[in-house]
Length: 108
Image (cartoon, rainbow, N blue to C red; front, side, top):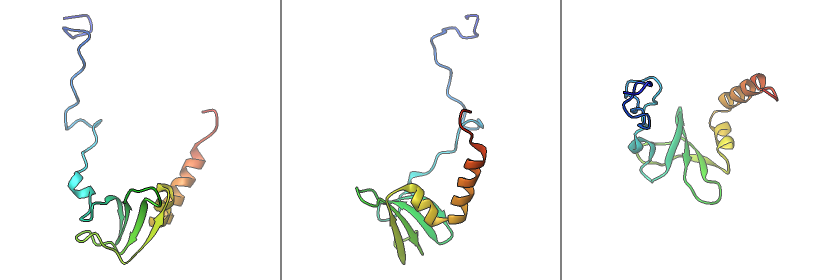
């Protein structure tokens, strides 16, 4: 054993155990993909933020989203995830923006 407690100092440390607080729980991919193949990024009440890919307006805020069929009553089609989050939950988006502006100072 070396002075650092390992027999081989070049050996990587073992990966953290699943119960370790430093490891995030895995997201089930089957729950993140809707029946039509779009990625469900977030749910808020009966609405969902979806990533549908493509070059133009890849994000959809689907109002009245049905997770079993992947269909919705109407939607907002947006270019950026920040615009989509604002549409999905304007109050939470404003709160996050305000919290960031309050705590961030240049040169920190």
